[in-house]
Amino acid sequence: MIQQKEFSLRPFPRGIHLVTGEIMRQLPQLPSRGIINILIKHTSAALAINENADPDVRHDLAEIFDRLVPENAPYYLHTDEGPDDMPSHAKSVLVGPSLTIPITDGHLNLGIWQGIYLCEFRDYGGSRNLVATIIGE
Picture 1 (cartoon, rainbow, N blue to C red):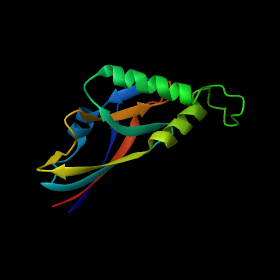
Picture 2 (tube, rainbow, N blue to C red; picture 1 turned 45 degrees about the vertical axis):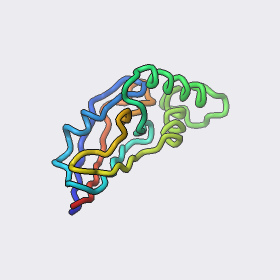
Picture 3 (cartoon, rainbow, N blue to C red; picture 1 turned 135 degrees about the vertical axis):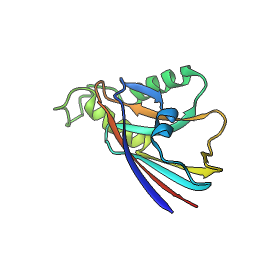
Picture 4 (cartoon, one colour; picture 1 turned 30 degrees about the horizontal axis):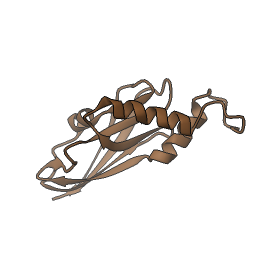
C-alpha cells in the first residue's frame, strides 16, 4: 500500500518549532508497519528530528544556525528578497527538506525524546506545504 497526502502547516515565526502533533493530525490512519517520508516543499525552511522535551534545545539550535549562517554577509549575491532570504536557503540545505521515519504498530517509531521540528528560517515564511508518502502494509 502506498498513500500520499499533501497538507499545510500554519505560519510560524522564525525559529525551530515542534510540530509532531500538527503533522500527525493531518495524516491518514497509518499502517501497522512501514515507513513515512515527509517532504517540505520549500527552499527556506526544513524538517528535522530532535529532542522534544526541553524548549531550550529549540532556542539553542536557532542561535547556532544564525551564527553558522549570518545575515548580510558581503559575499551574498542573492539578496533581492531581504537579509533573511539567502541565509534561509543555506540553512535549509544544512538541515534538509525531508524525513523518513519507520512506522510500527500504526505509530511513528520515534525515540521517547524525539519530535519533528519545523525549522522556519524566514522572518515571514508563511504557511508551509508538505507532502507525506506512506508505504506500508
